[in-house]
Image (cartoon, rainbow, N blue to C red; front, top):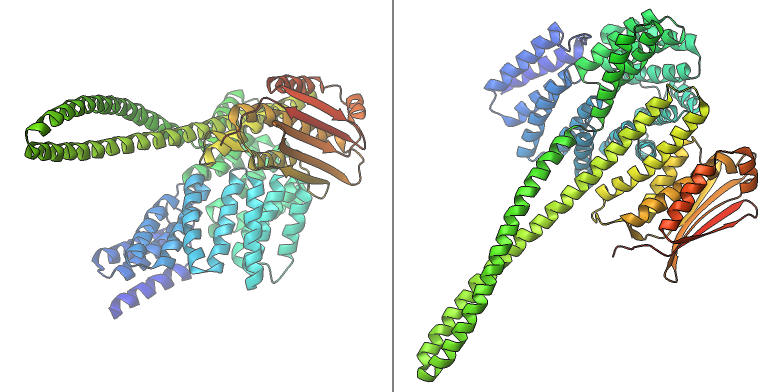
Length: 617
C-alpha cells in the first residue's frame, strides 16, 4: 500500500512540476505527458483499491483537459462512477462540474447545463458555498454562449457575490472578467475595457493562473475600440509564450491577429493566422472559434479575389453555425416520432380490444344476472357459486382496465414530450432564421434594408421566445404571459443596446396563461409597440420611462404600452417607414377583435381592449 502511494505521489509531482506542452496542430499529448498518462494507466490495471483508482482517473482528467478534451471526458466519467460507488458525494458533484467545463469549449451546451444542475443540487444540499460559486460561474458561461445574456449576468453576479462574502479575490476577478465579456458581446466595449483594467491593475484581484485570459479579453476590447496597435502588441506577447499557452487562448490570439490584418488590408497575412486558428479549433473541438474564423476568412478571401474559397468558407460557416444550434435534436426528434407513431397504433388496438372486452363483459353480466335470478329459485348454493365467480371476473376485468388506462396515460405523457420537442425545434429553426438574417445584413450597404431586416429579426425572435416558453413549461397548451413578456422586452433592450439606467422599465403583467393562438398576434403587437418606443420615443428625454401592463377586466383583456417620450406625431415626422408596423398592428388587432385607443399626453399611451382571446385553465 505504501509503495502505491509513493508511486502516485511521484506521478503527481512529475505532472505538476514539468511544463505541460500543449499540442498546437493535431491535439496529441506532449512526449512527457504521454509518458505520465501511460504510467498511470498501467497502475490502474493492477490497482484493486477503488479510492486510489479514482484519484488516478482524476489525475488523467487534469492531464488531458486542454489537449484532448474528449479523452478527458472518459477519464472524468470513470472518476465520477467510482466516487458514486464509494458514496463520496462531494467528489461525485465535482465530477459533474468537471463534465461541464469539458462540454462548454466543445459547444455541447445542453449537456453542460444538465451536469451543472446536478452539481448544483448536490452542493446546495451539502451547503458548500465555494463550489456553488464555481458552478454559478459555469452556468453563466453556458447561458452566455447560448446568447441568453440576461441569465448569464444573473449567474455571474451570484458567483461574484459568493466570492465577495468569502473574501475569495481570485473568484471575484474571474466573475468580473466574465461580466466584462458580456459587456463586450453587447457592444459596450468601453465598460468591458474598464472592468478588465480594474482587474489587471489590482494586485489583489489579479490571479496569475488566469493572466493570459485576462490579457485576451483586454486585447479583444481594445480591438473593438479600434486601438489596433495596443491590441496587436498583447496578441503577439501571448503567442511568444506559446509553449505554456493552452490551445483555447492560442486559437483566440491567432484569430485576433487575423482580424487586425484584415482591418489593415493585409489579407494574405490574415489568412495565414486565421488558418492556424481554424486548425486548432477543429482539432480541439472549439466550435465557436471555428465559426468565427470562417467568418473572418470570408472577408480575407473576398478581398484577395479568391471567391471560390470565400464561398467555401461561407458554406462552412453556415454549417458550423447550424451545428451549434443542436443538430442532434433532429435525430432525437425523428426517433421520437417513430416511437410515438408505433406506440400510438399499438395503443389504439389495445384500446379497441379493451372496449370490445367491456361490451362482452356487459353482455356476459346480463346473461349471468338472468341465470342467477333463475337458479336462485332452485338453490342457494348455485347462487353463491355464481356470485363468487362473478366477483373474480370483475376483479380481473378491473385490473385489466387499470393496466389499459396506465398505458393510455403513458401515451399522453409521451405525446406531451414530443410536442415540447417540436416546440424546441421550431424555436431553434426560428433562431437559425434570425441568425441568417443577421448574416445577410452584414453584406448589405443600404441602411434602410439593414433596418428592415433587423425589424424582421425582432418579429422572428418574439415567436422564438414563445416556442421556447412552451418547451420549458409543463403545460404545452398555453404561455405564462408574465414570463413571456419579461423575456421579450429584455431581448428588445439587449437588441438595441439599451442600459437600464437610460430607460426605466415599469411592468405590471398579470400571470395569465393564454392560448398560443392568442399569444402569437399579441406578442407581435407588443414587439412592434415596444420596439417603436425604444427606437423613436426617447430622443433628448432626460428621465425616460417605459410602462407595459397586461390585465383582465370585465370579460376583456387589456394591454397597455406607455412612454413619456416625444409623442407619436413627432415620431411620424422623423420616421416615414412606420407604415408597415402600423398596418401589422391593425391587422393583428383585427384578428383579436381588439379596439385600439391612443392617447398623446406627456408622451404616447396605446391601450388594446381584446375581446377575442382564450385562457388556458
